[in-house]
Image (cartoon, rainbow, N blue to C red; front, side):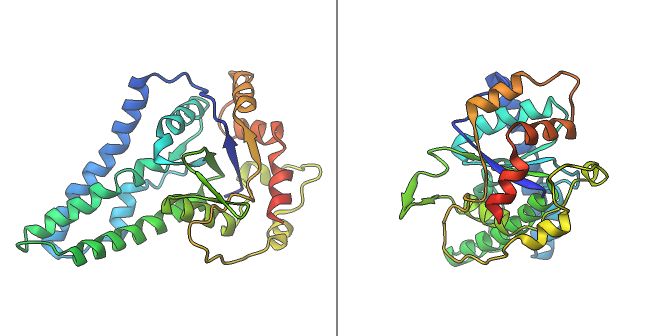
Length: 269
């Protein structure tokens, strides 16, 4: 991960129609369906969950440019943003395409176990849920580390509460993603390593300047380190992008437009 930021008051960039969003969901759901069949068959034969192969099915090895963290209730907005960025040559990972089907995974495993036993106890279902959750969290952390940009879609649905001047989320998934984005090691993208950028400290110096802290407060929304990008300004930026600009150059343009590199470093420090 190179840097992160959050979007407030998101405005649609892609003018996505319902069929485009539905097609995007179908592609994501297809991975879950394949995984559910794999879990059931594998569990009946070996009575174990192969976390490595499950992670490989859920999280393809292809590197993503952007990890998009958001509330499942904002999935339509997240997919709209993903589609807009994909049309500019960027690969986007939409987290709800995994978390949204978490209960389906638990059901698939429980049904598989019911073939071995008459019933699956409540305690066993809780254990299955804990095992799958741990596996998904580890894989998601790897995805955040590998992606260049961490983008948090901040809405009244993702952060509905404020207590003692601190944002609070009701989602354990958002909690773990935002918390990890505070602690993750930072990596300079390859395309930037050979460039001389005025006013940008070396990445080694940057990393050494970051405080590394462990937080134990559950469901605190760790978004203070993310510079804020207004949705209307983001929409204007997107509308002014040259058609020829693609891939990493789009991210460079975004970083420069909103001064994200300097703001992110200042907030992290």
